Length: 375
Ligand code: UDP
Image 1 (cartoon, protein in one colour):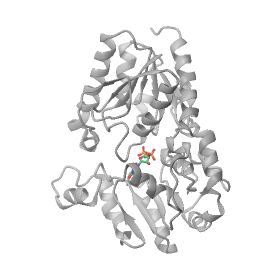
Image 2 (cartoon, protein in one colour):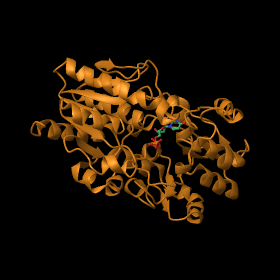
Image 3 (tube, protein in one colour):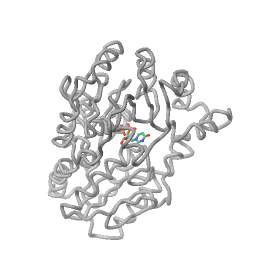
Image 4 (cartoon, helix red, strand yellow):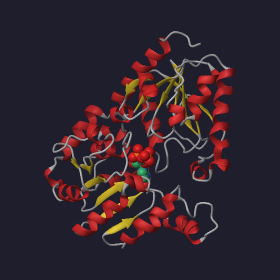
């Protein structure tokens, strides 16, 4: 089987640091290729993932552009998708398109009518009610958690082929690190991820906390400063920038609570694997939770608020803790050493390994490819 894997134009595959969907694609592709699938990857030209062919419009990932106003960036996703369609028109050897590009992917591909398409929904599905509420049935879709699909508009839920949980190569168990004292929040710095809650809790309890992640595509304090110091910068009033400046930075003190910017590669793995626990004080219904799955795989117990996909991933009291309020979360944070890191790793190997995810996608690919030809 030959699959065109459309990762979109935003970040290299694998991403050098932050990158939720890009990490999923980087996890899935090698496991598919081990199972004999040929993969044509449509992504930023800077991608280094081993594939059979790379299709690209942009040499570099366009993620830093994504935060600009819509009328300045709307052409990026469309230019990328137009290239994907041109590729599909020019050849007849693609058996299936596995698409990960938000809205533009399914909108364009359902109108095109080429090879069968499976589009994976990685997002909060209440985001685009007009689009998802009248979803085109000529595209097959799947979600990344049951709770995500449960909140989807009826038309989309009805069209969906179910949920496949995310996975991580860290589940293979190669990364080990001595346990340090710090707790960690790994993810985009934004109000939805609730870094300010983690900072407030850790400051109150006197526990060291490391916040890792970009702010609005800015990877370091120096890059963020450029935005913060210039009131005319297009991102100066972006909600994520304001969130960091107004609600997170007040807790940063270089001793107890630190923001280290976006981390990648071995530095990310080491920082994450040496944490005492990973905190998820989510202020939204997280759809997929790559960082949660990664924490389990590294033997770092996840502790979070009972929202979104967390109850599907974390078994409270065995592989992590779930709380209903900030106060309860603080109480569980004090008890993280009661959890067994090996139990977390075992769970990740059993449920969130690349091979488990690849097997499930292969079943879906076969189901979608076998479906009667589309109108
Ligand atoms: N991440 C990273 N470096 C950072 C912050 C995050 O490598 O500094 C990675 C993290 O390990 C995870 C991904 O970025 O693989 C974030 O994915 P998640 O689904 O948690 O977040 P979202 O896609 O919602 O931003």
